[in-house]
Every structure is written in C-alpha cells, then in structure tokens.
Amino acid sequence: MSNAVIQKLNELGYTTIPEAFYNKVDEWKSWYQGNVKGFHNYRVRNGESMINCKRYSLGMGKKLCEDWANLLMNEKVQITLEGQKEQEFIDRILTENNFTVKANEMQEMKSALGTVAYIPRVVGQEVSESGEIVPGNASGIVLDYVTIENIYPLAWQNGYISECAFSSVVTRDGHDYLYLQIHRKEDNGEYIIENRIYRYDNEQLADEALANVKGFEHIPPVVHTGSDKRQFVIDRPNIANNFNYLLPTGISVYANAIDALEGADIAYDAYVNEFVMGKKRIMVKPAASKFIDGTPAFDNNDLVYYVMPEDVSDGAVIQPIDMTLNSDKLSVGVQFALNILGSKCGFGTNFYQIDQAVMATATQVVSTHSELAKTRGKHQIILEQALIELCRILLRLGNTAMNAGLDESVEISIDFDDSIFVDKEAEFNKDERMLSDGIMNDWEARMRWFNEDEETAKSALPKMQDMVTEPQQEIE
Image (cartoon, rainbow, N blue to C red; front, side, top):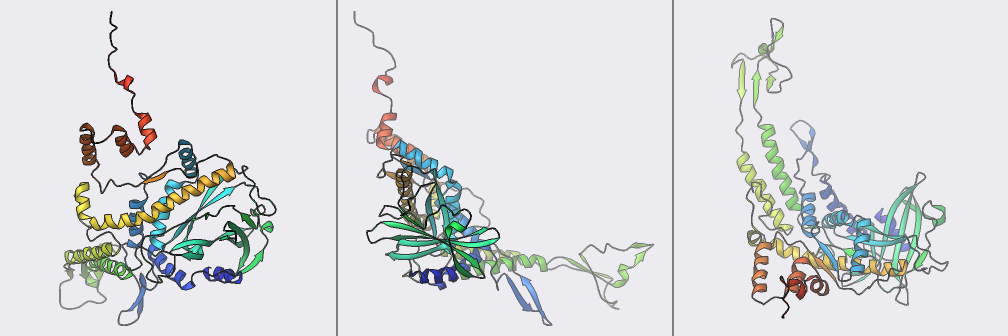
C-alpha cells in the first residue's frame, strides 16, 4: 500500500520519505506480532530430509512496547488546564474519544513502529463552496489515531513535520477505497486540508469523486482552516533515527536490538526444548505390548511408552530412559539474554528478572533502575509536547467550530506518574515539615499535591474566620 500512496503523492507533486523506510517498519511490526518469517518458522535438515520447525518465543517485541506504554501513559497521568471551562471542555472531548485507553495503546504502537499521529477532526461542520469554515455549527470533535504505516511527511525541518499526508482504507459496497487527507500550507502561511479518495483495485489507485462514495458525500475537496498552526500532532520515541538521520520519523524502541530479540528467543527455545527432548521414555519390546487375557499390557495412548520396531535378543523387555536436564544452565542463558535486551531498549540490565519476587521501595527502584528513569524522562520530553499541542488544537477547534469561548493560551501542565520512581510518602513528610517550619505556604502544598493552579489552591483554603473554633464573648 505504501508504494501506491507514495506514487500517487509524487503524481500530485509531493515528495515524502522513501519506501525503504516503510519496509523497515514492516520488520519492526513482524517482531511486535511475534512471528518473523524465516526465524520463528524455519526448516532444517535432519540427515535425511528437510523438516519444518517452529521456534518458541518469549514475545518480547510486544512486551517491551507494553511496558514502555505503561510507564509513559497510564491512568495516573493528569492533563491539567488552569481554566475550569477549558478543563471541562478538554476532559469531555478526550472522554468522548476514549483517550485514556487509546493513548496507552498509541504509546505501545509508537514504541513498536516508531511514529504515531493524533488528528482532531470536526464533525458536522458546514463549509462554504470555497472551502471556508462556517463557525459555530459543528456537532463535535473526533480524534483519529494513526500509525506510521499511514503517515507520509511532506515537509519538515529539524525533525518538526509541518506538512503531512494521512491515508486510510475504507470499504463501501464491496469495493476498497483509499482516503487521502493532505495537510499543507498555502502561500499566506495558513493551513488547508485536501480531501481525496481513490478506488483501490489490484494495488492500483484510480481517481474517484468524494460525492460518489457513501459516507464522503459531504466532505469538501478543500478545507481552509484559517490558522497558521497545524491540525495534527506527531508523537515518537525520543531516539535518533540512525537508519536515516535526515528523516523526521522515529524508530522502534527495539530497532537496534533485533539481534538481542533473536538471542532471547533462541535461548528460550533451547530452554523449552530441553524439557521436550528430555521427557522420560520407556522403551519396550514388541512382546511387552501383547494382549494378556484379552487385555493390552499397557495403554497405547500413553506416550511415555515407545515400542521398538522389532524384538531384539539382548536387553530387558522394558528399558526406562531418563534424560538429565540442563535447565538450570539454560535458565541462566535466558536471563543473560533478557539482561542484554533490557539494556538495549532503555530499561537497564535488571528490569526483566525471571525469579524476581521481592517488592522494592521507590528509593530502591531509583537506584536499581537509574537507566530506566533517565530514558523515561527523555521520552517524556516529546510526549509532553505532543499532549500540550493536542490540547491547544482542541481548544482552537472548540472556538472556531463550536463557538465555545475558550482561552487558547491557558496554562497546560502534564503530570506524569512518577510513583515507582519517587517515594511519595517521604516527599509528603518532607513537605509537611517545610510547611510547619514556615518554609512552604499552604497553597503551595495544595498546588503540589492536588495538581491545582495558584488561584484554585488559594481559594480552596479555609478563610481565617472559618478557622476560629470558639466565638469571642462580647465585652459588657
């Protein structure tokens, strides 16, 4: 699909990133799915013929991405806006778009594939024949969540993508269509959004009118946003793209750890096969399988028994074979492979422990996982920028499309979940001492622990007259 989209963009006069990069994304995706062609399913010669083999896998491609998603975007992350009206608006839009669930999912996908995008889209907005937005009549805002497979940067500088195309495949009446949305700047510096649709047959794209496709009849070919700010957000891991440093797209968290992923699965495959091949067997002569008084000597369905092809003169009738397992040595190998993989992907060497059964305090976690804390902080730089920009776009669309009367320059802060790296109890006790010593104001404590702005924190504190426990007696 990427090749067809790139060709179509070239025909329209646009240049995007090379197809070779999307081929690299396909490799990362295969590791995320846990089924890499030629590795997890392979063929070997057993001396007589080629046989098909399946390699056991730990599925670490997905596990790595799940863990990064949980560390970066979980239910404890808070997006706070100073204005109550703005806060309620953002909370409502994000809730309507299942953002709590999808945001974590997109962090997982960006860790796997390198780049994702959030595209706010106004629903039910009237647009004039010339593409000008008619303000105040929209029914809502929808968030589209897109992965790199459908993201085609068109213009960028210093890693910032200013113009971009997004694709999606829809099926209508048994036919596949490619919907192409192009965000680009006009000469006046304002953004327009081009909407195009193509019939997709045999990997070929044929022009189609939007009005002829069900569900796209009311989508205009061009929309003038009236803004010089982009209406999409790009998010990626904070890792330099060493496959092509000139590209603005990110890379998978395990892009440079493919060998380590292979090593972990090879070690685990050897560990599992040690038990498969070391299973206890009992070799029996054909005579032992005879019927005794009409009853079999042993159950033919019991796989522990193996009947020899012919009777031999020497040896016992029943000969047990009990293999010695080397599982202890192999488990050391699996652990060593996981240590290398964790280090290569930013978690540190001690993150994945097979026999870890001791709960650690936050102070111990910081000392043990210092590399993880640093890498997480680095990733949060881009994620924080992306979340704030997304809120700004939603506020702007709320004004232009819904006449919401919002302050687009309101202060926005992102409070990430640092509970596993910060000893909250120790921090609270420290602030409590500072408060009692007069070093910290009570409203500053509320700002810190309740994630409130200064005005809200001060207004929430009890008034002086409310703090008087007994009324003063009148002087006669």
